[in-house]
Image 1 (cartoon, rainbow, N blue to C red):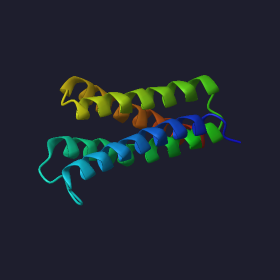
Image 2 (image 1 turned 90 degrees about the vertical axis):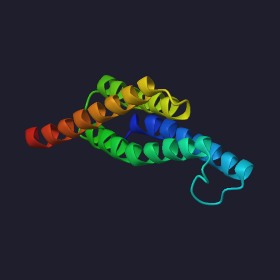
Image 3 (image 1 turned 180 degrees about the vertical axis):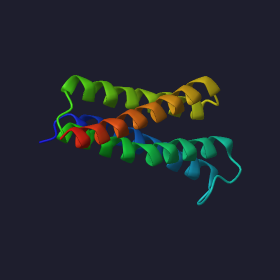
Image 4 (image 1 turned 90 degrees about the horizontal axis):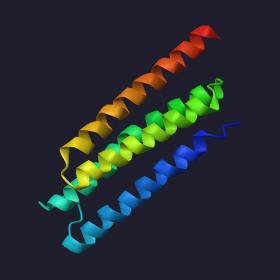
Length: 127
């Protein structure tokens, strides 16, 4: 049974739901049914939501696979928490046009995805 991955899945889904709310709010406020209508804040919210939606499924799938294959709990928590913090930094950077947190969030997301991918492959090769 997976006991750690669901924690990080829930946290990242809550982030996605929150970003959905922000996108819908901006759409209603600006009366934009599709696209960003040239509204910078809406465009940022759309990209923050989209980027999370593009990255979270891969990270959570890999986290579940390495948990299932026996990665120690502390490593799962470290990777899950680091991914979630990286996503928060990226979201903050996009929403506030702050390049440093956005870049750091993107960098650490890429590193974590690479580490998880490597761990998954190593676990299979060593099984």
